[in-house]
Length: 127
Image 1 (cartoon, rainbow, N blue to C red):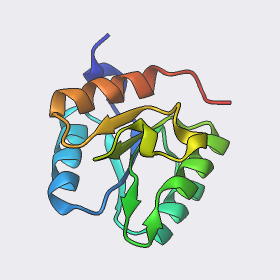
Image 2 (tube, helix red, strand yellow):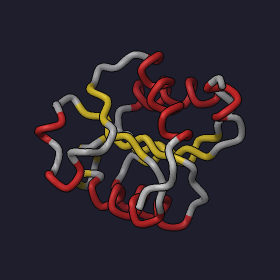
Image 3 (cartoon, rainbow, N blue to C red):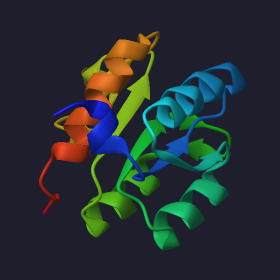
Image 4 (cartoon, rainbow, N blue to C red):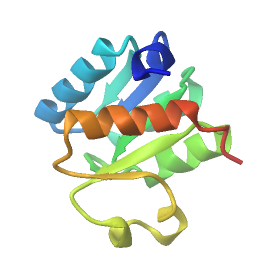
């Protein structure tokens, strides 16, 4: 099944504070038929969106204005919503409780983003 069919109409939270990266992510999601939730460039906004918005998946920059996205990841995990961390660092730099989560290392390609999104949207709900 193609990413296009899996992503069609799905709600994807974007937490990222670099505008050039936001534009690439948004363009990719829209091309796939997904709907962008956010984007959130600040921790307070990301926490609010993660808590109350209908979301099918999320793309989280680790370091954003106001802190890091780990509290957002905790909310998403609690809600059973799959997500991917995006960072310029390897997995070892993630907090230990999140090292087993999907991760894209910046800079990543649009194809890598599409592949990871496909994996997220096909993933069974998290425990």
